Image 1 (cartoon, rainbow, N blue to C red):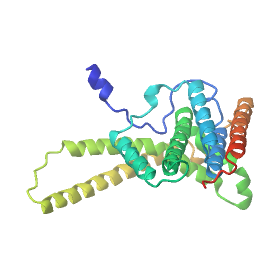
Image 2 (tube, one colour):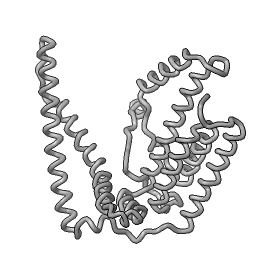
Image 3 (tube, rainbow, N blue to C red):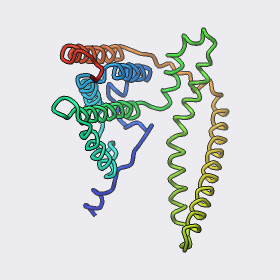
Image 4 (tube, helix red, strand yellow):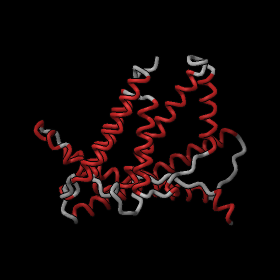
Length: 271
């Protein structure tokens, strides 16, 4: 039983905060969005090892402060390791400086950059309640109202999408499991197998659309009963002292990383 429990892969859990009370959990959702946006822009223009390492250090430190358990990390499938191995070998064959390992080093840097960005998004998902995202977006986009841009409506649409995504994922898993439990006859020819796959795909898509429409109708009734969409984008939460400290920490760490990258490498662009 112990070996089976250890070999069971951990699924990817999205948009569901990890229970806890820490400085990271108490940060305003808008502060987290600003930090993620700023770091994304920084890594776009300075995708070097110093900045990647600095962002990785910030993510690791935030995870330690928020006390994120190891069980929250999803299991990495074996086929992904195989793809990384094949990609690294193909990149190494391209050569390049230094010592013919330029392609491999570039591949490793892109892989590390992707992992860091995924970790950054995961930290926001693990420490932020979905209900706090829409009010934060509405507050940050308040200056755009002068241009008659429907910021509140966009925030409500984002909130509904974030709330519906985990629910629909669970529904699709149930539908897929139910489809696998259905008794099926074994086709004898390739043509019959193709027809069966096409028929099952149509049935699964039809069931998924039906479930989605039913969930949307239930959510609409719930929103109407609670006072309309205006309640979704309204929240009294605002940034405080801890948010200022967090933003300053990110600016100092990222600024130091950019200074090191410019001093050591001279340019953020690959040569």
